[in-house]
Length: 330
Image (tube, rainbow, N blue to C red; front, side, top):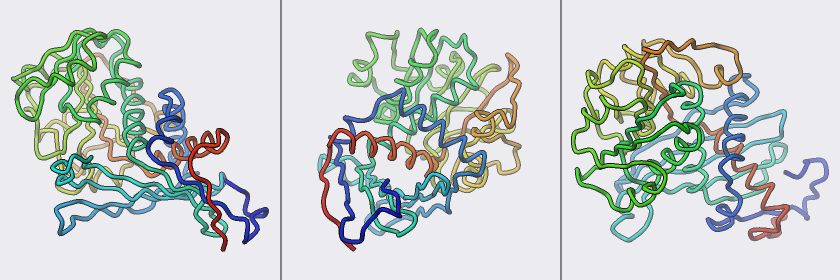
């Protein structure tokens, strides 16, 4: 972002980046690195996460704002996002997100970014960091709940960071096979639809839940010793994907303790001890995983993830001349 000391009031600029511009600057390894930075900043308390707004709307949608800053790095911004299920009937994407980066010295907007792809990518990267830290390196069997955008990016990252994966079982919301989901991965891993959720979980080393979070997806008894679970879908009060009793049996890791206990899976077991993902990444805490431990990563999504990836996209777009650069005098 332009240093505040050099921003003349009449020369301020605003960069607009639509979905196509964003997609051109999202590379998986770079996103993974940016998200790691976000969690480390959070762990060191160099990046702040402000209280989340998450509210149901009369239209049937859910609207939220996640905001934060990194004072030492001149980074400030927010993401306005939510879920509008009725969009599907109109042929649109139900998840909608817009990110704004601001100059922290003046409050002037610097960049407005389509946030859908960033949200998808940064959540996939956070899941990948959890897999690298918590899943057994010899994990060969993967079970995924969901067939949508987030289930796909979580699977993509799992294949990237767990090279010994050999078999993917997926559980769909309809209970039927999903040809599009299978086609996306069939050339890289053995894949099969799983009509029995408990059997799929029991036979898996890694379980990823990426659904709207309408209720428990499997029984706690199905989770075998040594399993790792990435729980993605619970990001609002009242949502859940994991069964009662599982967190009490597990080594729990969260992206943010207060946020997870408010809107994540940890809201259902707030007294279960947990580690912060950022603390583990920054070696401020250690989790010695034995072969028989069940581990769970509860992801609710941090504003800092959105901001560090948005900063990456903004810098690359500005250097490449992407997007629409307009005068925004003040």
